[in-house]
Each structure stands twice: as C-alpha cells, then as structure tokens.
Image 1 (cartoon, rainbow, N blue to C red):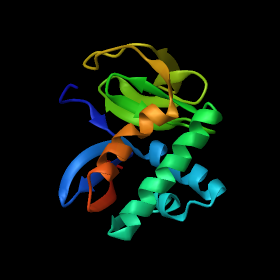
Image 2 (cartoon, rainbow, N blue to C red; image 1 turned 90 degrees about the horizontal axis):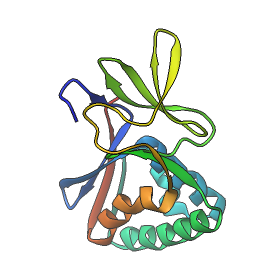
Image 3 (cartoon, rainbow, N blue to C red; image 1 turned 90 degrees about the vertical axis):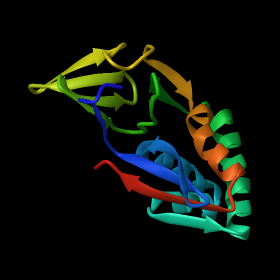
Length: 162
C-alpha cells in the first residue's frame, strides 16, 4: 500500500500484549451482530470497543466464534476483498481507505467504489493495492480474528483510524 493511502475504520487485535492483526470495523460489527442473534455473549462484546478477553473468557470467545462461523457459512454471508483490504458491509457502504484520488468505500452489492467529487466509481483494481476486488465468504474475513484468539491468553480489540 502506498504511503499516501490511509486505512479508515480499522480495529487492532492485540494478542498477549502485542498487536497481531488489523481488521476493518465492519467485520467485527458483522461478527457481533450474528453473535447477538445466536446468543453468543462473548463474541457480541466485539461490537462495543475496546474489548478485552482473558482466561475463561478467551475460551468462551473461541466457542462463540465457532458458532458465528457455522452460521455465516450456512447463511452464505459475504464481504469484499481487494488485496489485503477486507470489509463486510451489511446494509450500507462503509469507508475503507483514503487515497489521493478519493475515499474508497465497500458497498454491500457493488463491491469497492471510489468516491470523489460527489460521484462513485466502481473499482476492481487500485494502484498500490495488489489483486482485484472479489466477493468473499465471511468466514474468510473472520479468519484473522480466529487466528488471534486461537493462540491467545489475552485478546484485546481497539479502534484505530477514524
């Protein structure tokens, strides 16, 4: 990613005191929304940041994430990926990246769009970001969270980049 590009609406996952993963806030929002519907209280807490899990709460979070992933798989929930940018816009577009050309948004139906001068232009590729835009299964977007929780004794999540 170019230095002139800045991610927005990001959440940092810290494992045992060290920053480990960065996710778009929409991914955690979707995890929390599904968790609330399923009655998974630990994973639902990810909707209100900052959040911290230690001891038995980490084990509960692991179990909750298994349930969220099972539901997301069965319901065929998706999000969007462009290079290492990933977002899970549910009902409305979410901002993802500020660029010199404008702000990149993830739209639930159209994928990535570059907004500038009051117009939105659909984007399949973006300079400085490798790869092409594609719809992706929500469990793939949740994977960095699952990896962080799997190896942690302490998991913390806090917002960055608003």
